[in-house]
Image 1 (cartoon, one colour):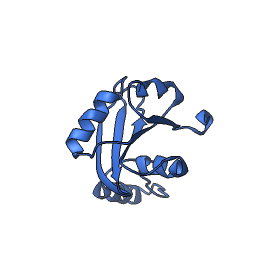
Image 2 (image 1 turned 135 degrees about the horizontal axis):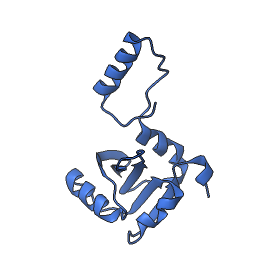
Image 3 (image 1 turned 45 degrees about the horizontal axis):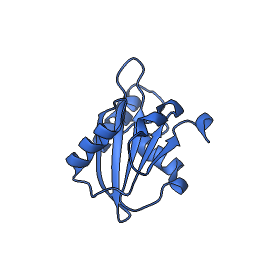
Length: 132
């Protein structure tokens, strides 16, 4: 199971699985899994990393993390919209992010257009089949 959730929630899920005799190998945060997958392609500096979590039959979620000086400085999850610019603006305000040098979007190939209008934006595939 991949999830972006607080540690206490993950512990609760693990406890419930154990109580109901369900096998759970591990819980891995989806956002960090995708960032780790693309580590070599992500330059440091003042950056935003946006990961789109698609949800069947429901609105997608944009997980937005900010880094500056090789440190995580903020994270927020917001509803995803067609153009990612307003989502990034709102996330930056909520997290009081430093001015950005680059933005990375981890999403399916069909969502590359969401980067339109963002300066120095880079798309990274969320599925192996989408790799350029």
